[in-house]
Image (cartoon, rainbow, N blue to C red; front, side):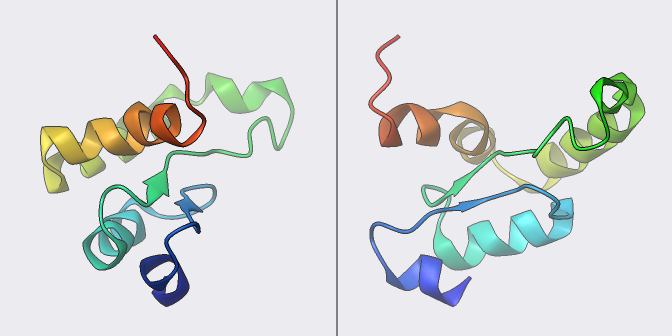
Length: 86
């Protein structure tokens, strides 16, 4: 986390990271340095059927982050980093 905060061209993602740790990383590194990631389908396509897991995860993140921070995490950081024009 310290390196992500320190180095301008280094970003972090949320793959296999608990929501409370994502929140901590955003507070330390800034909301513009963390991107949503999953590493799915780690256990095959059945991984996508666990709606309850993702609903709890996103609900927890939304309760801790501002709307702007949540949008940065979910899509605007990736859009900017990868120069995606929508």
